[in-house]
Length: 392
Ligand code: 3PG
Ligand code: MG
Image 1 (cartoon, rainbow, N blue to C red):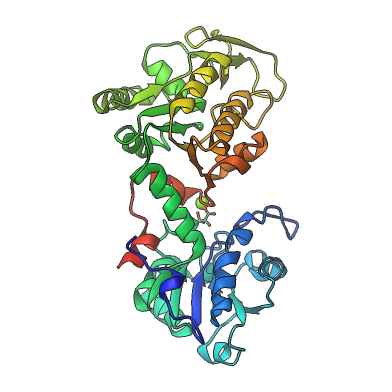
Image 2 (image 1 turned 180 degrees about the vertical axis):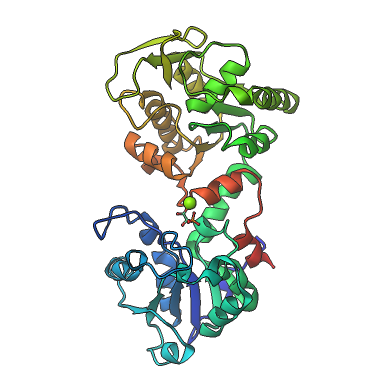
């Protein structure tokens, strides 16, 4: 790998600026999912063990360069102390003198980096200021690495830098899934709209052996092949694009897997009356809300032969029962194969992780990314500025 890790750095007595992503979901001042906090613990603990002081930089929400009290990071301090087992000092307006006055291995959290517009502008002055606060820069925020901001990109170039433990784990899982995978490789891509995943599909057809398309996106592909999808969510204006992707896949020897049977209903609501029909037999007044059992059986068969799986997006309207059935069944099949050791499975994206958690499948996946947008951009084959800065 082209980047350094904490093991390559001399951390004793050093102030280590650590970019973390603790942009966690909160309700009424309480964190509803602490995953992102839990996952940065190894980095913080390893720095302290080596005698360094972790100075955490993080954003929260999108305050657009203004001070927004509801987006302060201070409510996260107790969670961070709990998770790391260390006292966390919160600093609203840092200076190097303040930091130098703290004990050698003190864990510090600096207020929301996005409270100044200089952060998202990747202003060199802000990057320089941040660099003045530390001796070493460690990026542990893969999920924010698609942003070229002062705390993710600018500052990395001004200090000796390295990847944190979570960044290392994310990068090696993603490499194993798409850069140097064991074949056959299957990608499952779902979600509402083709339009948001065009680049991703274009990149994947050249790289994977089977591309399973699910959710509303599948309807667009079915319609592009002349199938009547009734009232289903469908981007009819993207028919040409869908046909281009199908042609590109054919040239690349990528097997595109669309549903052969579908679950249809007349209403988009939990428990709506539904029936399973052939994919080309959606009634005029109905909409496709899930893939059917025959489609799931085909996906299961492909997974059973596969060595690698990369998953982004649900196969159906997973947020309303029973239209989570195909997503759940395929996810559980993948989880079982992963647990048995025959499949390396990597999943990412906010909705995806929620769907896999809902299915009770996440635990047995080989790797669950903490990233949403960054995972997508990585699947699109893009260079992530936060990662690139570590390599320079
Ligand atoms: C995320 O939650 O996906 C990351 O923290 C990035 O946040 P952003 O989309 O506001 O840049
Ligand atoms: Mg986002």
